[in-house]
Length: 269
Ligand SMILES: O=P(O)(O)OC[C@H]1O[C@H](OP(=O)(O)OP(=O)(O)O)[C@H](O)[C@@H]1O
Ligand SMILES: Nc1nc2[nH]cnc2c(=O)[nH]1
Image (cartoon, rainbow, N blue to C red):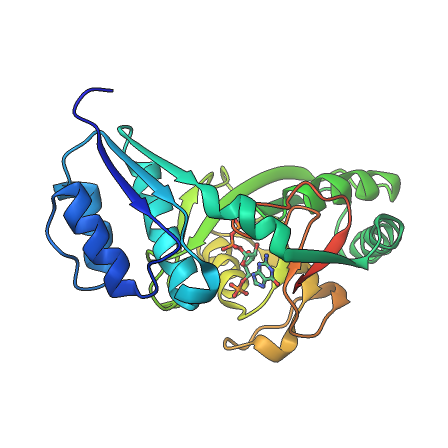
């Protein structure tokens, strides 16, 4: 690429300010005052094409590691002329250990039990709405388990995301794709992989009701009640867990581990 503006965020940068200064210097753009400004400047003001190499050190940057990376990922999604190379992810993979929390067999057995409970509480035909991305594996297994229980769900997906660019979770959830067709008067089952603060489930449930659903029952494979900030309990829960960080079976850690066939918990080595 000609005229490529390239910036390397190396592991020696140990503060948010240092990362911002490096970006401003190497991409020849204004110095961002905060994360929102970073997003605005990189998406609108930095001249492309851009390449950002992310080699930051998670331990040195602490919480800012995820926040800044999330903002950069969002800009990279918006800009066709930007490439973000995450070289830190590979190194981190070696630093983390994933321990099995629920095995493939345990998950499969629980999913079938959930399907049985759903079949007892829903009509034979209903609309199942899976929340992307995290619930894609759970939804795929659940609909087949439901078929074995005699249900005939119509399957839809919604992709939602907490609003923002990696700043403190504002509690605003935005729909980024796949609003189901008409759900007027329908019985809906809303399916998510994990319930944490409760914001995602509360927001999407209300949205479905606002769009005319006659009833919106909720099902979360995993539930962390100790983390709740919005008062909502899923109607059906697969496993109640402590405040551990889980991955696998569709659930990611910085877009990794979704492919694991079991549910694991991440432990720093
Ligand atoms: O109870 P809450 O605090 O709202 O969190 C739960 C949500 O967080 C995760 O989604 P994430 O934003 O990571 O997106 P993803 O599903 O695309 O991985 C998960 O899949 C839930 O939908
Ligand atoms: N990957 C992952 N995402 C989450 N979102 C809310 N809780 C979790 C968790 O434990 N793991």
